Length: 310
Length: 272
Image (cartoon, rainbow over all chains, first blue to last red):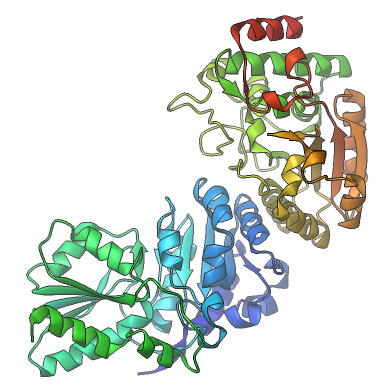
């Protein structure tokens, strides 16, 4: 198993897409060396727009570029991408269903040192609430490459969040990425763990541990948070003694909301591993913060035992 | 379309009459900031812009983006008069299911280029279109009408910087300086003056005109064609509610309701 960084994979994939398609344009708000949009800038300076520290103008400018047939990738940190230009995304991009991709980099708590102002605990909630918006959170580098290619092909607005730090490879190389399609990474019969992004790895680890205790867990990678077919979620939870969601995001509006809403008529015990409606803070490592918030395999195992009374 | 000055004056009057008729008595409409634009919109659609109403998505058309989206009815009147859609659609304004929404909707109305209405965004969108045109090697123009009250939005100045930085000389802004915003005079809120100096300082070529003088509008738009290396802002001094006697120079008809009597007065004043 290898390790990849979602930001680097994203930047490299964007360059490949740029070679394949002249209509790919990239916009950046002075964070290109972090979001890795700088890779595109190096190769296609004429199709790269440094929009300085002005996110609102950047998003509306991208909307304008898309109106001339361009596929516009907009880059900044997730907290700024979803927060500062919310209205520009809603009004100028989503009502008209324009072909603009908003890439939220350093998502969740992954910008561990910079604290609450730079950590996004609610970006998925904000973006999911906008009609016409597709919301994606890949679980590793392999899925990131597939997802970037898929959203470039899809004609419409997309928000995609990426983590700042290296992640172990999880997504099967031969597995197709389809927008809206959850993927079972490990099957099981007692409990269903729906996991998103950076929490898919810990979910698999938790499932392996639970196996030793005689608990069989199904792990589902939910990388498309919207749109999602409720029936698919219901089918994946069918026959289970409990359902758990795991996400590096507030329980409000993220994966917990997606799954509980889908299962609203299904009487199955449910627990969420998520951020409990609070802001992040500075720490010396991403893992330290994840542990602090209980966003790890132990947190998932605890919830499983709670549900099963084990 | 290449209307004469006299024809353009008549078109502006017809636009105003259609504005009054499509809103009608007893219903709210943004008369003030629409009527201030009648001559400007008339010159753009019936003389200056390269466009084919029968082919609204023609790649090489000049674009008009109404950043002050609340002025939609002036654009609707002009688009219908050009033939983008039947005149009868005007009478369905803001009705459920109508192609004519309260604010411009590109998905519903032929000839509308972008969704505007949340103020401050149209100029940035116009910059993006102008940048796209340059990437494609196209020579069409992007016209963007901005309200003077709208320039309180910080995003306008982000766009102003972006446009000059990217040398968008295919972008022409028109600032509708009718001096009054929804609740009163702009000067008593955030004064935009010295307005000319502001746009010059942001790197734009600036032309100042009387926004109701058709000849001056034509001259300014033609001048803008000759500017290279920077965007142009035409500062158009206008009268809010121009042409509707009781609506002129008042915030009351920024988004106002005409009585039946006022409706008849307005129609009489605007009929030939």
